[in-house]
Image 1 (cartoon, one colour):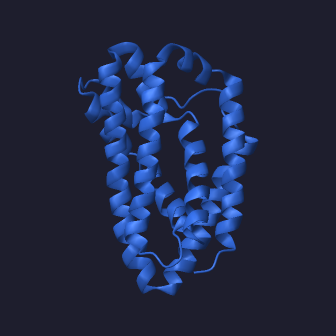
Image 2: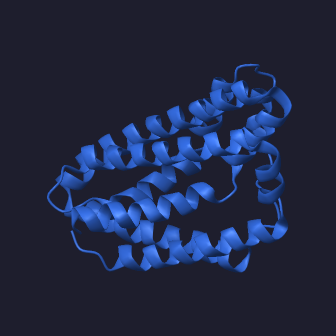
Length: 209
């Protein structure tokens, strides 16, 4: 994959994923509505910090693993393709009607008055973020570039897009909150994201090192 192909396809996919309402979106909107814009922005920065931590962990691990082993590359490729396909099919055929609800793991965080801590631990303690990064990021590494550095760079693009989207949500909390909570919006975003995930699963499965 060339550098241009990598960046364009990844940016499209990760932007769509970022716009799809999920736990992070719910946290930021809820914080903005109940505690104000400042706390919501802190929560958004906490979410971004969590993504950076996951990005660093995944980048270092993948960089060492994929450089050392052809078998590891192939195993990760097929596991990643299967996982993305499963996620995509779930979103296509069982789309949600509402934004993700709070998980049990989030309960202790509600008592914290620090928006950054809420966002950080809500993200870091969510293993799905790490699993997603492990399965999603490797397929976008451009040929001829160091795996670890490039993977972390992709995570930083996610952080940048997330910052822009979070700032937009916070600046327009009420209208965006109402729009994002509409069942039709949630369903259609899930289906569109699911379709993209299935397409990338096929792409990953047919890719070569």
